[in-house]
Length: 307
Image 1 (cartoon, rainbow, N blue to C red):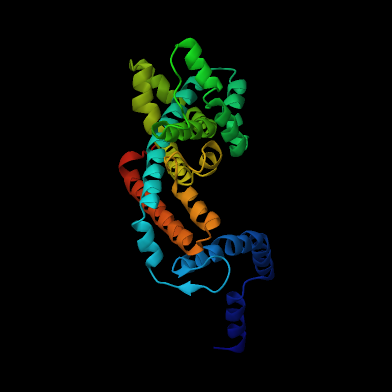
Image 2 (spheres, one colour; image 1 turned 180 degrees about the vertical axis):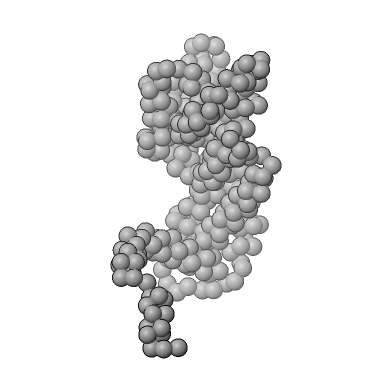
C-alpha cells in the first residue's frame, strides 16, 4: 500500500470536521438532562438500594444487617395492609377512571363547541393535588356539602366518609378519579378524532349502530391509547400519597387508607428508619416492574396497531 492510499484510507476513517463539531454540540445539549438523570435518579436509586441492606436513623454510623429489612417488611402486617390498599386503589381507579374518561370523550366528540367543557374537565389536572384534596376534605366532612346534600334531598343520615374504615378508601379513590379524569379525556378525545371518518361512514352504510361502532370500531382503533393510559394510570395509582396525606388523618382510620408510598414516608421520615423505608421502596419498585411487564406481555392480544 502506497503512502498516498494509506492517507486516503485514514481520511475516510476520520469523520469530517463538521460532523465532529455537531457531535460535540449534541453532547452539549443532552448534557443537562444526562447529568440530571445521573444526579437525581441513578445515584439516589443506587444509594436507596444499598441502604435497604442497612440500619440507619439518619445520624450516626450505618450498620449493615443484610436482608433483615426485607424480611421484616414482608412479615409486617402494616406494610402488607398498605400493599393491599394500594392494589385496591389501582383496581378501582384505573378501570372506573379510564372507563368514565372514554365515555366523556365520546360524548364531547359529538359537540361542536366543547372548549368550555374541556376547560372544566382539565382544571383539576393543573390544580395542585394538595388544594384538590383540601377541597374534597371539606366536602366529605360530616357537615360538608355532600353530606348535607344527602341529608336534605334523600332524608338519610350521611355516612362518615373519612371516619369509617369501609368508606375512607372509597373516598380516596373518588378524589383520585376526579383529579385525573381531565387528562385522560383529552388523550382519548385526540384518539377518537384521529379515527378516519371514512371508516365510520362505511360502518354506518353497512347498518352498524352507534353502540356497535363504539365497541367494534372505535375501541379497537384507540386500543394503543387505552393501553398507554392504563400503564400510566396503574403506575400513578401505585404512587398515591398526597391525597391520603391531606384527606385522612394519619392514613386512617385504622390504616384503612395507608398506601405503600405513605408507608415509606411514615417509616422513613417520621420514624427515622431509613433502611426499612429503602427496603419498602425497592419492594414497591419490583411490584411496579412486575405489573408493568405483565401489561406489556398482554398488549399483543389486547392492542390493535392496525389503523
